[in-house]
Image 1 (cartoon, rainbow, N blue to C red):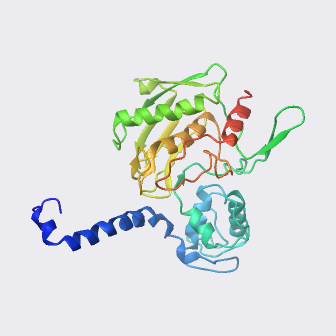
Image 2 (cartoon, rainbow, N blue to C red):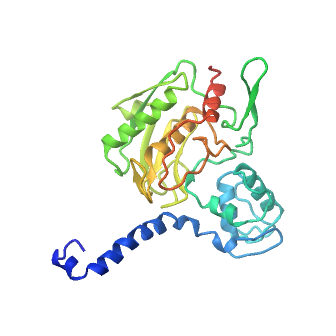
Image 3 (tube, helix red, strand yellow):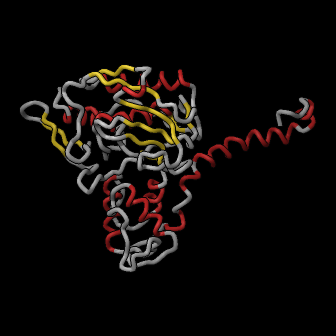
Length: 314
């Protein structure tokens, strides 16, 4: 369109008006295409066999709700039978995401499974849980029940590492370096305000405690990205320090229709770098999913309680 003479616009004004009106709809369709993959499974329940059900099992395996390489009696990798173990896994998923725990693949459950999310499992090695229900005492008479979680064995940075350095890996260039530095600094500053940590950027990424980069597909860390949609980033527990964005996503510095907000995702993944697992509080930064185009950068009380409990700080 841009290469045609300007007079074309005036020759067909109605056509261009229609195209402009339709443009937001096409962008919205792109941003919600992730909701389609599981649609045909809506209403599926225990005892049924339905083509494509194995994809739900693969999803639940990946995020910790089923044992890795779950198989039925036949040992088939494409098992489309809704068995007891799948029903139990679906119920656990529904509890974590505040859905009706029926064990049935209803529309809301399938919608939530298709949302963009962190690649770290909700349940790690069958030991961690989004609904930890830990009690944090606030004074002699009061307490609150929180739903933050930690990685198995509660890995933490040692007391001697109160200042953590971070750097940017060469990886894939997706957004401008200065923009990336700015939003990551903002995300680190938010965690610094509620923890005993300080964060300092270093130019020598090889010696940095925390290493940030954009990658596609299988990038050598044992946790491949899956292209546009679904898994948008992941980070490793202390003291590994690796934090990777999926370069196949559409990224933006501020909320943009159809794009993931870099700072919102960075804030979540930094929580993992510090030792936090996922929270079952939807408003918490450590909740596993985020909407396309949303900006979510205010740490919730559950996030604050989690980091302070893990490091035994006020």
